[in-house]
Amino acid sequence: MRIYHNMEALNAWRTLNTVKGEMGKSLEKLSSGLRINRAADDAAGLAISEKMRNQVKGLDTAVRNAQDAISMIQTAEGGMDEIHSILKRMRELAVQASTDTNTDADRVQLQNEFTELRDEINRIAKTTQFNTKNLLDGSLKETRKADAKIVSPGSAHFYVDAFTSSIQTSGNIIIEVGQFSNAATSQLEVKVTLITAGGTTVSTTTVGNGSIAIGGVSIKWDTDQIATIDDFGGTLAKGTKVDGGAVAVFGQVTAGTNGVDPLNYHIGANEGQVISLGFESMKADDIGITTGIKIDSQSDAEFAVSAIDAAVYKVSAFRSKLGAAQNRLEHTIKNLGVASENLTAAESRIRDADMAKVMAEYTRQQILMQSGTAMLSQANQLPQQVLQLLR
Image (cartoon, rainbow, N blue to C red; front, side, top):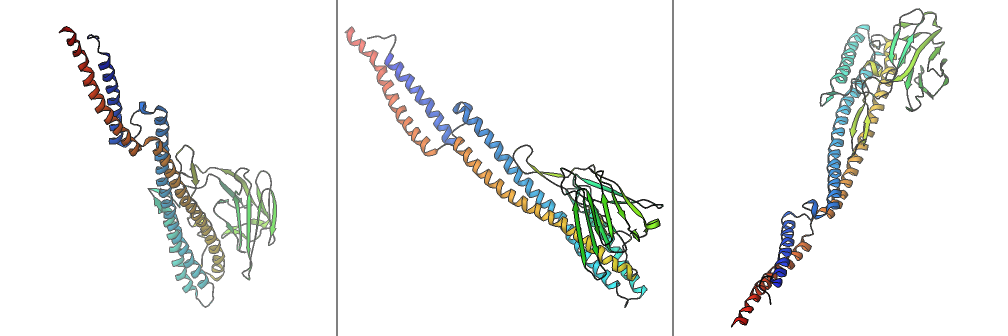
């Protein structure tokens, strides 16, 4: 029997302290609802959980990004919807001016409204904005752009943005040059549409090097992407004469950037998870409704009808592209929501406390705490038995 070292009491005290520490951790888990409150609770689990939390936050933010992108697209489409309405009215005016039941004075009045509507198209294109970004003025085009220069022998140069505009002749031949159907190889696409006197439309499209012929017009280009129009005749555009009527040359058609990258919408939790979208110019000149398109004479009005048809096609084509992009973003939002939900569930299994399990542990620890306290009290009584030897 020893009195200096009560080993039984020391053992009970050590066990009691251990149970007390575990009981404190259980109370912390029950009060916070988390299984991991500090790195010491589960070092590896904490690292994995924090990474998952970053991913969940990124996914939730990406959902908001995609929703904002849809709002931007809807803003642009709203402007284009009104441009469509204006073009319909302009076509109506052109058809009305095409009949000789009108006098020249009547056509002047029709031309006045036609001009005002063209100006309104330009105003809409220049002022349609989202978060101060102009959407329809051509400042947010696709990364690839081609410029075509028409050189009329012996006359002034006539420039046209071949990426969005068309060259129109008095013979109702619409030529579009410079679309790149394959951005990787920069193949040149040439589209020629012939609208006959009877209203029949014939269209031919060719991609890459070669030549096409339609309606007596031959278009050729070589590896340097130089296009020539042979035997064109008449006019290149309203008011631009070809002296001699022999050859008009599309000077070097090159692909490059227009100085402004398209918009990148970040739709993922990690770097590089973006989709890009450019906004084409919807200004009157860029959709083919130039100042030379008029309805103040019967022949001009007839030509204006086909020119407006071409403009409607361009607006419709880009509007369809925006609609497809919006549908894509809506699917993206749904996918991001599912990913965020599943990742949150996985993180919860690592980080969150199982309250029932922790409560069971806490109950066990309470019992051990009470019994340990009782046993420590008993162990402290053992040295007093030495007094029996001294009697």
